[in-house]
Image 1 (cartoon, rainbow, N blue to C red):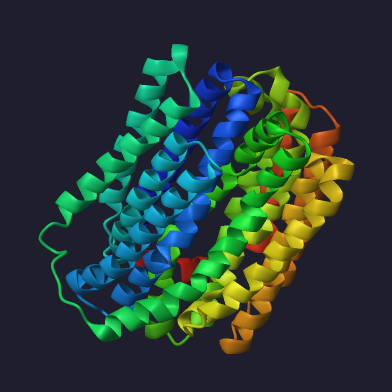
Image 2 (tube, rainbow, N blue to C red; image 1 turned 45 degrees about the vertical axis):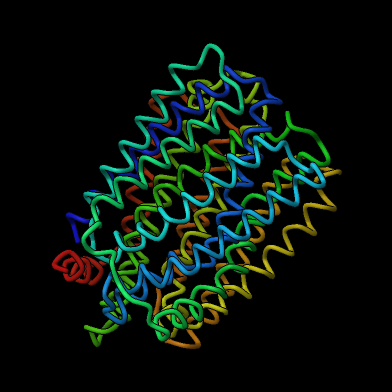
Length: 457
């Protein structure tokens, strides 16, 4: 487990570095309006990816881990869903030709990037299931270096369309590497049971993925509608700084499903192991969140310019919600082990609809700050609903009160750091103090014993 965690961790942390660098290039070479437009196009790629992927990437991981299917058979049956994605893409492009809703060049690039990312997603599902974390690291590093290199090369005459071409190019290179690596494993045969199993688990995730997209990204569409692209840029950059925490959480999210299933199947005291994982995860994620809040202003000025500093409150608000939201990666164990993915779909749909309604009423009144608060409300709803329904399926005794106390303390520290200015030394002391307090209150000897079992895995 340690080796796997190491590669996933350095992959995600390198992503933070490259993301900050690329944001710096983009925000300093594109106007606020251009950056806002680019961000909306990237959000659109994400939305199309969620819809056209049909939930198959997650289903592949489950098929290989839970049912020990052959890689080639699972991939071959997955391609049937990819062909559907291509047909839908052709229909969308044709429709746009008739009604001219979006720039044709933009749409062509968006659809090409989306479909390449879908295939990448299938192969990443195989990477995760087969524990090829080193491969994942290498491909992501190549991808990030290519992206950054081309941005640096074109920075003096950078345009939105050029950025889309760069994204297309590095996505294609990633796909080529994955296909070459697995070339001897991808041949398989059609199997109706695999196809139906992929459909049964994956398709319900589409609505959930769309709903998750809604509360994560639809606010940008609504900010654009009510306030314009400049506000989208201000909101987006500060949201991305807060979302660095999601990149950290992504290390765990990629690693955890494989061990979640194995722990449940192998250990009778799985409940204690799940509890220990949640405690350690909460300890790490909350302390990283406090560090980001502490240095948010310096990060904003380092990677952008003072124009973006006006919206730094977004970082504090959003990151407070991300902490709670990311806990559901562990709390949803009962739902995923039971194969009842439709429950997560229903939860995220309700949260997404709630987010849209709140945004519609409050963004015109309170601006993009309202979008941050409504996102947090949706995240809290997902957290509590996930815990409730998951524990009805498989009872796991988590130390939720401990986590609640630590989170309350975090909010207090975040409030102080936002409204009062401290010297560098004072800020360090505050973070160290919180680190020791949270460790003392949250972690126990039993948790360390449980962690050793996971390390040995």
